[in-house]
Image 1 (spheres, rainbow, N blue to C red):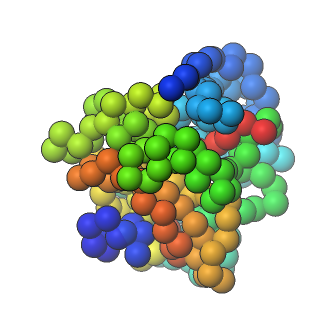
Image 2: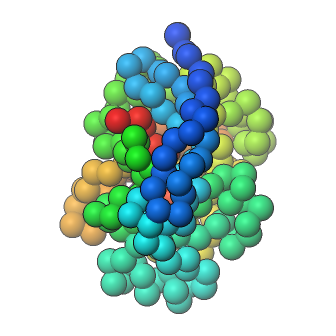
Length: 218
């Protein structure tokens, strides 16, 4: 993938701590940090669950073959970047879009995966796609001084992604997130923060890629 198309064919803020949010299944009680941006309430951490809301296990796909097999079958899967649990603790898990769209529910109770339109509401509130990225990036962790101001409180980290062929790319350089909105038949919409600029890129990409997930309160 190339540059900003690497992964895509690429203020008033109130912070709060939810101390007892029922996640469902094996994720019964999990604390999530939240931030209010405009009229939306976002998690400030990427999703890191391995069970659906109903308690059923989401398969982990470590090898390229496993990753491709789940995508080819249109089935949910997750992984840690480079299959390293330390990356999971820092960045959350990477999910294919089939996990995002699964009827068993990926988001904890009280939350949902933001639609393409809800992502646009966020970026519009922060000054548009050309200005919102710097406000959404964390103050540290991005390669080559690509950090942001995090003035929004979104705390976006460069968790990298997983390609359709199972290759891991761009940790430290890019933060891609899924929306819940389908695009072309084999694609879905997502958003990307990149270390070289302060933009938020929007793209319609293959559902078999591995992106982070950020939840929005219902």
